[in-house]
Structure formats: C-alpha cells, structure tokens
Length: 387
Image (tube, rainbow, N blue to C red; front, side, top):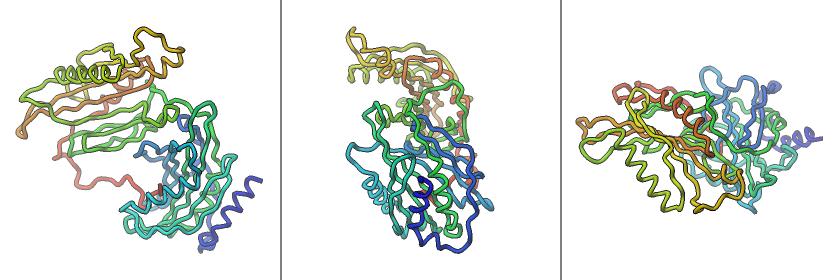
C-alpha cells in the first residue's frame, strides 16, 4: 500500500516523468544509520559519501560520471518550531533558495504530499541553474515529534541531478524515500575510536586539519568549526571542535602564556554564567609539528553544594573542554601567530576527549601561503543540492 502511494505521488510530476530516455532500475546500497538525528536511509549503489559543510547536514552522497558529479542525495535535519507544518517549513526553505546568489532561474514546478517513514511529507519539484549548469531537484520535507522530549525535527531529503540525467531523478527519489526509517534520537558522544576524513585547508590562515568522519566542517574568518549536532539539547553542535587562528598582543608570546590567558578567560566567563570551572590538568603538548600547551577543564552549573536531581542530569549538564595552543614567533609581519584547537563534549569523562584531541592535533599542519597548489580539487558537485 505504501509503495503504491509513493508511486502515486511521483506520478503527479508528469513534466519529469515524460522526460526522454528510460531510467535504469535503482539499486540501493546498505542503509546508513544516523542515531544523533534519529534516522536511517540508503543511497543508490555507486553513490559515494561526501563531507558535510553545515551543522544540520546529516548525509551527502554523490554519483560521479566522467569525473563530474551528475547526481546527489542529501539529508538535512532541522530543529522545528512547535506549530510549524512541513508545508510551511518547505516554503521557508524555498524562500532561502531564491536568495542564494549561486542559484539562478529557480522555478517551482510541482508540489504534492508524499508518504515517508509512516507519515506524510510535503514534496517539491524545481528546476534552476547553479553556477551556469542547469539542474533539477526533488525535495521531501517531513516533521517528527520525538517521544519523551520536547523536540520536533524537520527532515529534508533532497535528490538533485543535472538536466541531462533528469530521467533518473524521480526513480532515485522514490527508492530512497522507501528506505527511510526513523530511529531513537540519541546524544552524539565523544569517542576515542574516531576515524578522520580528508583534511580541510586554509592557506590564508595557514592551517590544514582533518575532521572526524560524520562531523560537519565549516570555515570562518577566524579559523574552522567542526562538530555534530545534539538535537536532544536543542540543536547545538556538541561534541564540537574549533580551530582559532589569531595573533597575540605584545612582541613575544609562548604557548604556555597564551594557554594560561585562555584559562583565566574561561574562569571569568564561568563566574559570569554562574558555572563551575575546574582545571583538571595542564602541561606541554604538540599541535602537529609545533610545540604547544594543553589544558583540560570541566564545567557545570554552580549549585552551591546542592546535588543535581539525578546522575543523568549531572551527566547532561557537565561539559569537558580540552584545548591545545601553539604560538609561532613574531615574523616580519609583526605579532606572534597563535593556533588554538578547542574540543568540547558533554559529560564528565575526560579520557575520550583527551584521546580525540591527541588524534586531531596529530593531523594538524601549519602551511605557508607559498605551498598553496596552483589549482585546488573541487569538493562540490556541479549541481547544488537544494536546501
């Protein structure tokens, strides 16, 4: 019955179904599970997972032909307001896309409802031009109430293809939609067995750092932000890691002096927020090939001797932070340069955080602008997954 309903929904989009060229049957690979977002789904065989670049990205997989991405499947999960509907959320996202400067000629073609994971979603079909390349995208929005938590999540499943492969669009969407399963939403956790993906590089700021697989990574003018969203805590990135690149005041600076400055700032901020701030350990370390200084801090609410309501509450409220700081001497440009790698996680167990910091720090490289390659490999598909 559910399969017939999906087919009926897809039949609504006659414009694409009438496209020339018969599409091959879609064969799905093994389902991928994302417990932190409470969802599982499968991508077609041959689709390769790609890195995530935004906090609410959950999965991004791409099919490549002749060295160019021609089709993509993307899943995002957004915390949703209490009364918003899937259709209202879809309209908000369509408005965002219309303001994207990289997207031109955005044309909504069709919209309908579609069954997905035991509920009903709001589906959209659109065409557009992304950086000069014509493309089509099909989206399905579905809202979920998380049992036992005051939490609503809006999942956005997007399938994109180039205009020359448009006959593949709806068969791929239908197959992926049928593979979607909802799971229990869990807190993401720090692990000492994390695998690292490809490095993220910024030659203007002078760093190269590898991200944990499954974490998003987003560059900023100050450095790099990485993490995985905890939806049970309202949609904040936790665990997370930040690489801060800057310059210290004064003519000279050491890693230890910089680190102790950060410790003092953390204590002042904790006092302002009525939190405890305990330095568990500190001492010399390394950041890639640079001499560094590490400290570990435990933070939590200042209850003035009042015990938390339960062990679970204490675990949810405690935060561990590990920071390694490296300071380069002042050069011809002036002030010393500082790299501070900050890792934050939920809970009181510091061992996984220390182990992950050791792994991340070992992947760090200080790069000079003169080592920048003349051409950098593209990490983005030619057709941007909408949303």
